[in-house]
Image (cartoon, rainbow, N blue to C red; front, top):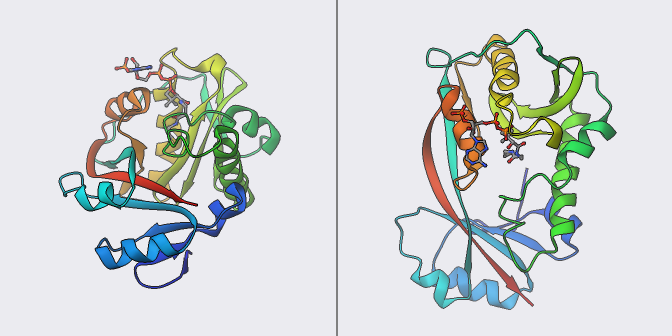
Length: 226
Ligand SMILES: CC(C)(COP(=O)(O)OP(=O)(O)OC[C@H]1O[C@@H](n2cnc3c(N)ncnc32)[C@H](O)[C@@H]1OP(=O)(O)O)[C@@H](O)C(=O)NCCC(=O)NCCS
């Protein structure tokens, strides 16, 4: 859970740990909050409705980093693709999953932020995968007996997922994701959701092929105060 600094700005300690600076997420947008931001050095994130005015953000030095969209799919709408060679297991070692994960999230907001070292952005996602693995929330995706990717989730929410380079671009993802989503529905969830960058065309097309639709888009802005 985020450490609440006040009801308008929350600390994000998992990010400050990686980036070596204070990191915050702004929850309420007004000039009073913008004035607070200027007084405390650190890296700030704010997620806003895409149709809202961005003037106050631009006036206060915030810059655009990403647009997130929420894929969602009910059990009824789910399209399951079957391939006898696609399988899931929880037994693969973390180090093998990290090899696949490391450097995979180029579409993410931290990789697109020119103020963040991309190597540290990679570490952020490595750490997140380690944490989820420790909680038993990572499925390994196996194709033809070989580790092809992973699928990390919490409850009904898909949090991180990737295929290794060798298995990408071959139309295999829909079979592997079918097996993993099927597992989530079998656990009793009526709906599965996720969050992806709107520019991640491969992920977007993958979700469409599985019957997902999209909602709750938001624009993500950052600011570094030195
Ligand atoms: C997202 C990911 C798992 C998709 O796997 P993939 O092997 O690249 O995708 P596939 O070859 O199975 O193709 C999936 C669909 O996207 C399309 N596609 C693939 N690459 C594409 C690209 N670069 N641009 C547009 N569409 C693309 C395919 O045509 C296919 O659609 P179709 O079924 O209608 O033909 C993979 O790209 C990946 O691991 N990316 C890095 C990690 C990531 O971004 N994870 C998501 C956020 S956590």
